[in-house]
Length: 294
Image (cartoon, rainbow, N blue to C red; front, top):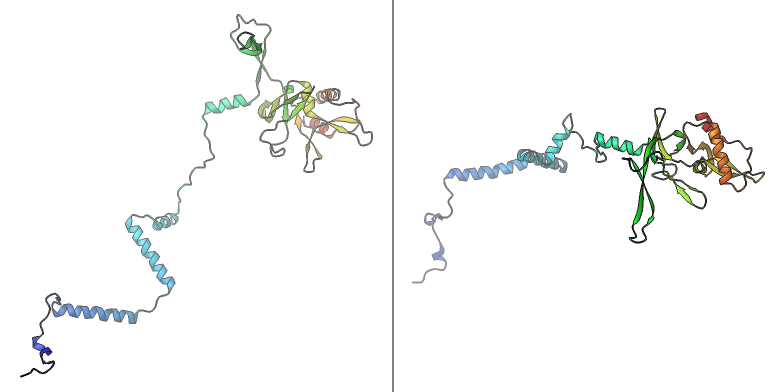
């Protein structure tokens, strides 16, 4: 007798056996799952929607908490440093250069005009122990080496009339060190005003040692031409303004000299630097300023 179709697939409720791999456990675990599911549903229904700002704030707070627990690194450490009343000291500037007292004294001695070395004709080279001046006198025709003669010398103090002081600044002439030149007898002589000189207890900056009086005249005076007579005359060299005109302020000064010394230098300038030695009766403002300042 044939079996009706589909009758073999029917199972009774009592015949269903639970699977061994699905360990549902007791009824308590299923109850917990149901509670968790219902709890999530209840939370979603009760909690209101949060804005993006609130979510970002919570995320930042979570990062700060994690960094503080990890050892205080990151943004939490920076925030803690900024919230302190006494901040840490800033790092020392890299523009500072330290010197010892010996180095400072040596630099002051080298950069300050105090004494100079000159020949001493009263001493012979046999019994002289120093100092010396070495002077080259040519080459040996056989060995082609330079011949140098050691001349006995001595130190003498530098007088104020040997010093020329520059009254301007390095900003006015756009030079790190003021260095003019004097052209005399088709030869150019340059001077650097980069030394100090102490006069009457006061330190004078930007000084140069100028021993030749003719060179002093070439530095202190300049050539001018009278508009009416068209004759050249000597005038105290003045500081130039933005337009290139004289400002009335002298450019150089010789410390500790009187008016007669400047007049002597003017005569030297007219004799050696002017084509015609005609003196002008024009008033020299710079000379009045120098005489009044001394």
